[in-house]
Amino acid sequence: MKNLLVLVTLAVSGMSHAGESVTLRIADQKGNMHAQLEASGLLKNLPFKIEWAEFPAAAPLAEALNAGAVDVGIIGDAPLLFSVAAGSQVKAIAVDKSDPVGTAVIVGKDSTLSSAADLKGRSIGTGRGSIGHFVALKALAQAGIKADEVRFRYLTPGDAKIALASGAVDAWATWDPYTALAETSGTGRVLVNGRGLTTGNSFLAATDSALANPAKRKALQSYVNLLAQAEQRAYADIDGYSATLAKIIGFPQDAVKLSFSRRKAHWQTIDAQTVAQQQATADFYQQQGLIAKPLKVEPTFYRGIEVASGKH
Image 1: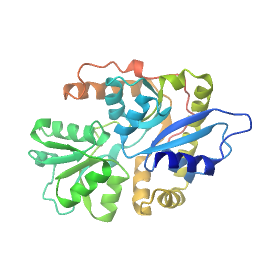
Image 2: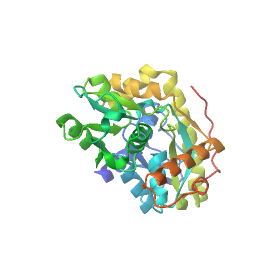
Image 3: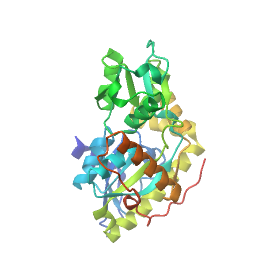
């Protein structure tokens, strides 16, 4: 299926100029970069080719980066740390700053749980090392609950959604657009959101081998600026963008609009504040035992990419 996706993307996008042979192999997640660029009309006549691979969550995307199966991918702050701590040869090259309200622990519409404190002794579905997992751990810590006082079930978003609906788990720690879908469909409600718990940072992470290739490095710079441009276009016409994106990813328009509009996202160049935020996240993961030893994050950033972007 992944190979079919790649072939279709190349055929539709028609991306290279004559004589240009640079190809970026880009790892994506549902409703993210590929869909946003397509909805914004920016996937035409690019000076490089793109091969897309879509993953259901950050963990398999990180595995693809680590294996060198892709050159670059979008990944949350927590799963990126989880990956580099495990030895992945990747660097964060740009950051997408956003309001983390859509990263949340959600429960079924008829659940009796009313706060994070009620999660003690309960089961939580999430992806191991995901941003959802991180927010759940932070929420538990804030409520004075140890991680071993709940039962984590590590599931893909699709399986976690089913598990919550069936009662196989008591809560689901996830992210948008899944949070927005639960809210707008009436199938779930937010128990605790990520504001004050997580940074809202997502990173574009590239492999060391891609960054060592001058042609790919140049293409990566162009690609980052495309992402910033697509995001700016989208916020200039949220209704139109949401309608187009909803058709592309197969989600209801109201869920897509809620998800995108509340993120207030903007791409920017890596700065000292972002590095400090990532260090704090790494320290928390190490304290929780998910990272075996202290990790210094500064070497996991690449500072050679400049982002032309603006806040919304």
